[in-house]
Image (tube, rainbow, N blue to C red; front, side, top):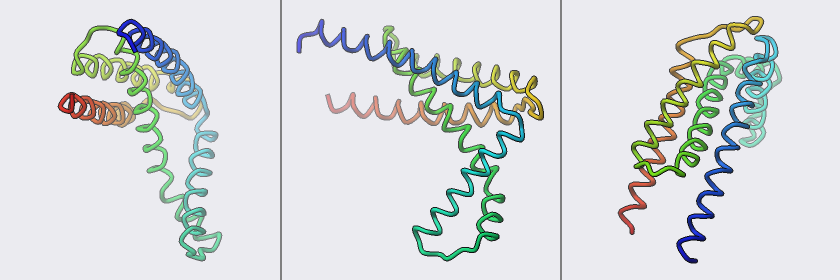
Length: 165
């Protein structure tokens, strides 16, 4: 494949990542627009499914009451892990999108981190206007940690790939 075709494919992938990043931001916004009751219900349902599936997979024979007890205990962990995952996905999409400009990997990661943190801040401000929700600095930190973790993995991957060339 000649260089012009590689550049063209790279730009197309970058554009697609930019569009997907915007779509993903809308998904995050939609989750944040849920009332506290709706959000808790989703987290509880996911926690219940995790515990129930784990019990079935490992043949643990856990009764319904115990499943609910374990699910309730891990609901906050599931919620915070979901926050980190949402922003890790956003960071990956933004990193690919930023690849269309001639930035070093480190410049891309810095720009990406700033964009992700700003969106996390705006997301928490948005939650101030949703019934039963609150904007929390701790959630901005958790969201940012997810983005930074994803960026660290991407930088390691890019560094390792650079050594092989």
